[in-house]
Image 1: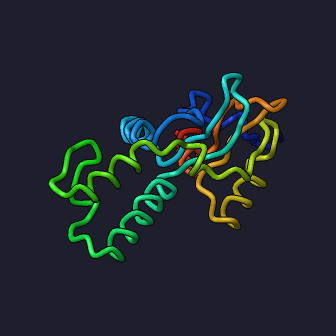
Image 2: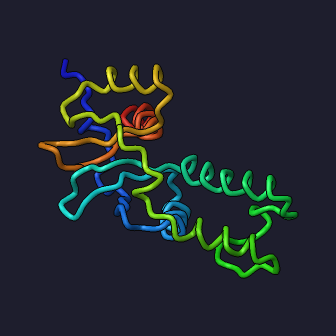
Length: 160
């Protein structure tokens, strides 16, 4: 019996971001593709890092905490990030957040796997470390991503 490998379940059409992409651009791409994170790659698809919704929201909350300490009333969450606000300090924060490049918020130390790794070992690692998705590299190039959702989907797809 052949063991199920990452290549059997991985998604090969991966949403990627560039280091110079801004939070504004990344947030829109993540929302449109309905994914919660994306690998950051260079122009040759070498993995440089990873950004998740959590990284973006953490950045927003850091700005909110600063505004709160400065006594600014209002919340960054009350405004769309591409609208103008009446408060200059909120507006400046929105602009700074929107223009923040991925290179400044991405996680640089990223757990990766290979296409030939046994899926059971990758799942074990995901559960142990609380990771939802792992980029798949072959010879240093991003070739896919494996997520918990891919694994769940495969449990019933193969048996139907």
